[in-house]
Length: 76
Image (cartoon, rainbow, N blue to C red; front, side):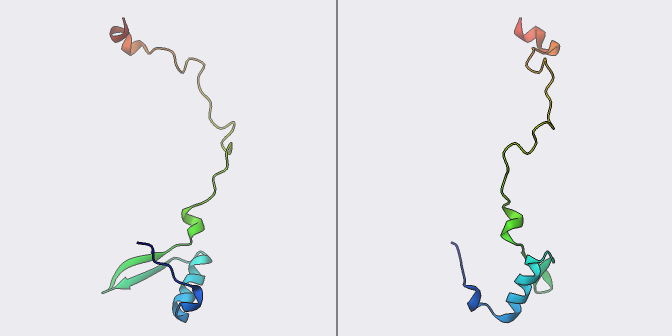
């Protein structure tokens, strides 16, 4: 179940914590002296991927798909 709330319905203290999290400050909420919840901005969890961003960083050997000598006995 998804629970969603409007910013205007938040208590002021929660809004301050969210603002801190958006600025990059770690925000943890405790229950019974145990950290149970961490506030994280969505942009940190789901960033946009950029196609081709690793272009030129990965190289394959010319014989990448050549049979391996270790498996000769299984392929003959």
